[in-house]
Image 1 (cartoon, rainbow, N blue to C red):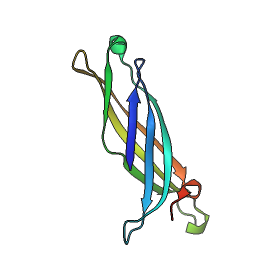
Image 2 (image 1 turned 180 degrees about the vertical axis):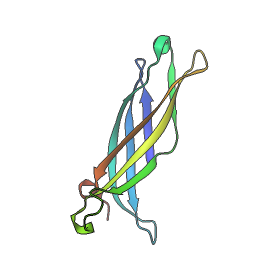
Image 3 (image 1 turned 180 degrees about the horizontal axis):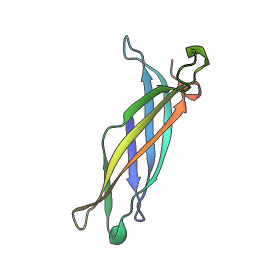
Image 4 (image 1 turned 90 degrees about the vertical axis):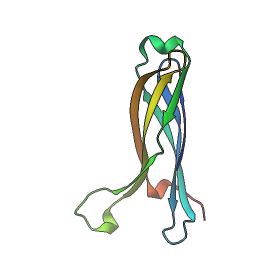
Amino acid sequence: MSSDLEVSEDGTVTGEVRVVVKSECCGEELKEAALEVDSNVDVGEHGKHSLSISADDPDLIDEYDNPGRPMRYRKHWYGASISYTVTCDDCKVEVGTGEWSDKTPASSMDELT
């Protein structure tokens, strides 16, 4: 998985996280989805300054809905969650932190093989 995030001067965090499902035996990429990030951080008086964002590597979400039902009736979901920090480059201070997560049905992911 990979992420590409940007922050605007009003604290809007945007970007894309690429979710990849790999084969357990050989690690070959089987499916992928690009999830759009749209989140906000309160930047206060730092909004007119130069802001930068740093993020942890995305964590994979791999889950099924409707626990207790037979597997053939359950929907498989993949997604990502990511934590990020926004910093004011002019003041050299951390302005805020945030988290974002999203998921998509496995059936809607693009096949790579």
